[in-house]
Image 1 (cartoon, rainbow, N blue to C red):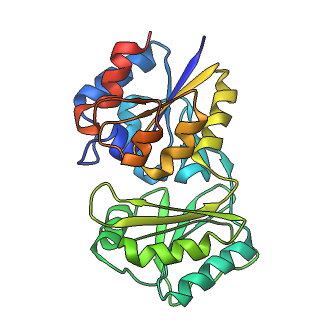
Image 2 (image 1 turned 45 degrees about the vertical axis):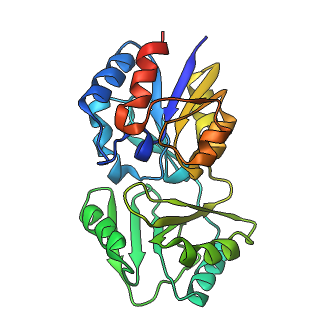
Length: 273
């Protein structure tokens, strides 16, 4: 029986410093070399997953919570699920009503990503920009006013702020049938992420597509945050790390060691044959 193992990154496979430990690299790399089917499903884009080079992943992976599919072996994107122009305009209108514009991701035909923003609202967003600006896979541009045209392929909205600030925005955007907002805590601060993408794009859908592509009989998924819940429920075995959100641990099939204890790698070392 072939099993696909798929893991979230931040708060799950990565430690609290957003790094892969040497122990995790050694264990996961060894398993991949032995033919174990392992990949990742993350809210990050390709520019942020260069850290995975040390694992030598050869399978497709899920990025931006299911919006993009990228094949590490072929070094090419294999899928993109954009937001319709009409729905993107509705999201922008709601953000303006709350006076809280986000980073807006737009993709070209080759899935190169350009991120537009009007202003940076806090230090976490400033850090987000500083870390990612100037990389090869994603460009950033400050604009006076974000607009959407019929030729734009809008794929993602993301912002970071306090829970009370983001919750009413989340609730309004959640009324738009064609998009899916997700609100979850940042692993590295006391703030929250609000991310918006097409309702047809989910980590769960991407995971099941990869399962079919590689011919796996079942899937074991690892996660820690609310944006992982659908994926864990859709997996044959959904596993939460020990420091996962309480709701995730409550609904998981199994709870293992924490992210700072190399929980995913240590579990796979013991139980993957």
